Amino acid sequence: MPRTVNRVLLALAGLVLLVLGGSVLAIGLGASPPSWWIHDGRHDVLLSAADRTSRRDEGWFWPTVIGGLALVVLLALWWLSAQLRRRRLAEVLVETGDGEGALLRGRALEQVLAGEAEVLDGVERAHTALTGRRGTPRARVDLVLTPDATPSEALHRFSSEVLARARDSAGLAGLPATVRLRGVKHRAERVS
Image 1 (cartoon, one colour):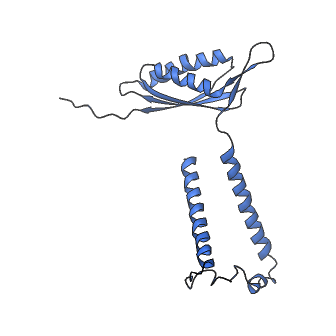
Image 2 (image 1 turned 135 degrees about the horizontal axis):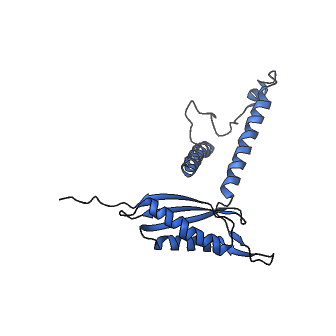
Image 3 (image 1 turned 180 degrees about the horizontal axis):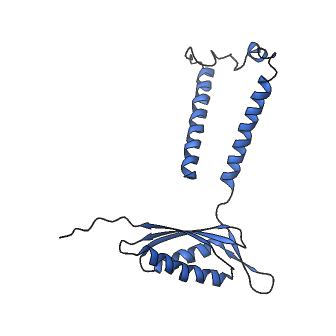
């Protein structure tokens, strides 16, 4: 869902900027704008002196405009920082018992979890991602099950075997996981 919203908002913002920028460029190069467009010609300004001074008596107008634009800038910066933030965990802190600890690459643990999950009966494919903090990681797991698999059995074996082994080998107190089960697409079998 967030990816879809992200893409729609990005596409809309890009389309608006492309249309406005393209129209300003076209008018600046000498194209004649339609009668309803916001500027009339090549040497026209967006806000004329009359437009800027017409609201001088209304003390609320310009602070409201500036506040609205500042809010738009803050929302854009918040959105940008959310895009640049890492979603996956780069490393996991493994307790070695000497007080120092060791660092395990997050991708390595993800690949081990996925590889061991794919070995289980009834699991066609697996995809894992680690999130959270390096001392308390969380796993997001997508399991694609074969048509003859029992979802409860596959989930039980994954949590009791694969997840428990990963938790114990990394020396973690807990490794909470969100597991999403999906069935592999297949043709319906004909009954005769």
